Image (tube, rainbow, N blue to C red; front, side, top):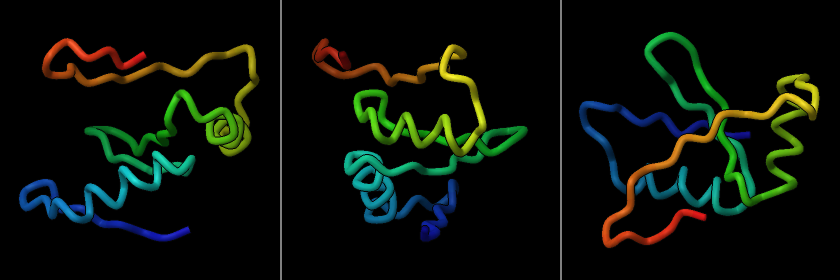
Amino acid sequence: MRKIAIDPSHVDVAQAKDAARVLAGGGIVALPTETVYGLAAKFDKKDAVDRLYELKHRPKDKPFSLAAADTAGGKSLF
């Protein structure tokens, strides 16, 4: 585990890309929200999603919410 601290008022693009590489490689990242920290994994990385269930002690029959960004040019996320 390692920490990539990103200052939201001065985002370092290299750090953001590093976090994206962690997700793309099947890793899990912690994301601060207004109230709590959320854990994130790419939905298409089964091992990462399985690990997320383990970390959160969440039953497999209780799905996670999916956050998706709008993409330019109508490119599908799925």
